[in-house]
Image (cartoon, rainbow, N blue to C red):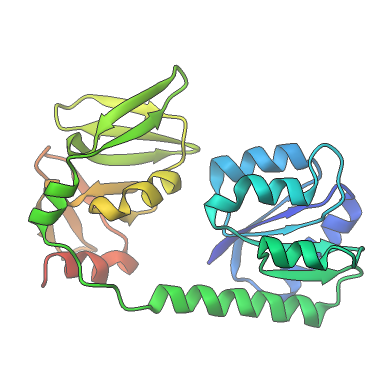
Length: 247
């Protein structure tokens, strides 16, 4: 399942596209419509949707401007426009697809199916050889920038026990029992910390593998941490977690 954003300064056009997507598939658990391009940009940076359907010619920020500012996030983006003179720009920006208005349902369905196929392929791709716990510990002698409302903190990764998502914020729990609330999302930190041995064990928890003391597989599954915290893990994460422990 995935989250989709629609960005179109013409409300009716955006509503029509949203209705068509809902009629074609139930793959998207959440579809948000934005008529303000600047508001949409802020939401993209904060929450990082999986896919964006976006008009090009809009006041304040054009679709082209938005893509230039978010391309480092790697979000699948599709132009949905009444103008056919931006195809070269779309190719240069490496957007996922280019759909002309009025949107034909078959063309939209083809694009959605292509996105789902790519996403499923990536999800089923065999993982490269996992590093050992010792290698992870060595890698964690690094730091990460953590943004808060008050400023920016430089945090040692090996002090982070787990991170808990709180709406659009993330709460860091440290080895000494202290905590820090960041103004960035859990998904943002998942991308940052995955190479350092952090696992998204649940929708709201990102756990540092080096602090796992005990693994319980019955009753759904739980991780006992050295901090005495007990964190359940999602059923669809069980195989990934077991792989870390070579069970």
